[in-house]
Amino acid sequence: MLGVARYGTRDIERAKIFYDEIAKLLGARRVFERPEVVAYKGAEGGMFLVGKPYAGEAAPGNGTQVGFSAPSRAVVDAVHAKALELGGKCEGPPGVRGPDPNGFYGAYFRDPDGNKLLVSRFGPPD
Image: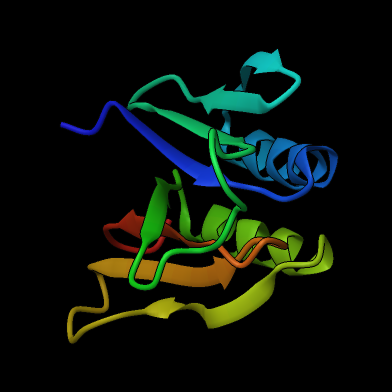
């Protein structure tokens, strides 16, 4: 259903450093770049863009979140750790959410601009 998601940034160069590393861990890559925006895409799913807003200042939305799918719980852990290493903020450490230990495994963080992200895997431990 989702074709594209976009977050604003106040510093496109900082955002590229952050998201290049996150994308690499998730098996995604940068698919296009312009001075004001950069886009990432994995083998499946929609495209994720981060860039300067068309009007006004970039600000994180209250209740806004983008989620990335990971191929394993180990990748969830690695993405969360890398996000924090690159200046992100923890919003929930990696772990099982809910009663099913073989169900949803996720981690939450904010990028350096304050945008909230989720990385997750559904299914038993790998």
